[in-house]
Amino acid sequence: MHPEAAGHFLVGYVVLAVSFVLEGISFLRSVQQAGPEAELLQRDLIEHVVATSDPELRAVFAEDSAALIGLVIAAAGLAAHQLTGSPVPDATGSILVGALLAVVAVVLINRNRRFLVGEEADPRVRSAAIQALLDTPEIARVTYLRLEFVGPRMLFLVGDVDLTGDDTESHLAVRLRAVEAKICTSPLVAGAVLSLSAPDEPSLDA
Image (cartoon, rainbow, N blue to C red; front, side, top):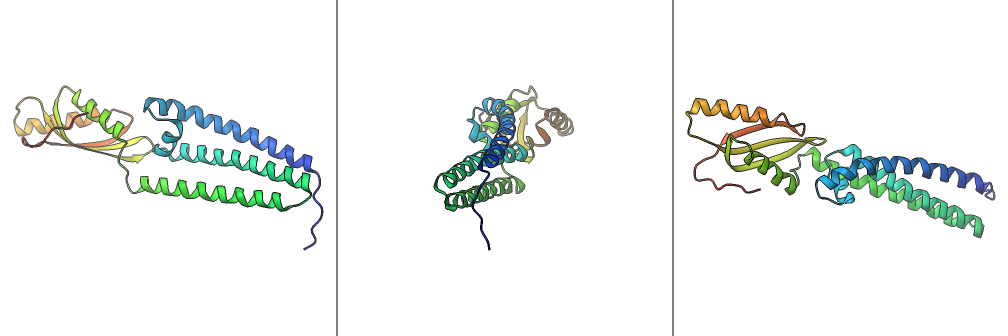
């Protein structure tokens, strides 16, 4: 109702600079965590952050990125306010920062929603899983496989396999349970359910 002329611009710059350093440290930590994971899965950094099943990593990376960009926008608006004497650039900067945060929030909500309803694993992860199954001595071939994320970096595996040899039904059931238990020893697998393949079912390749 009674606006006053802006002053103490230096205080504003100091606050923005300190915030930028703190947000930058947090951002670098998320990059250090995401980088090796992205390299392992042969993804670029941004692709991995978007695709990862870890919502915490994605949230920290996205929020810190938005914060750093927002701080630059805020600093530009403050500088323009100081140079022109008009509060319009500062107010415009605030609106842009708010819009940026809203966009990031919508993207995070949409991405995490997909995992809540059950998202299948990346094709490269699927190929690696098929190859891992085929490398198991007890498995001759794989005819069906579904990998679904049930938590951060945690997959539930459902598949149809043809076991080696020609055992009786009761012995095959024991062998299937043993293979399931072996698969579940992986820290990436939350559970596994295997069934026997029919003879006429086509095999899957890695």
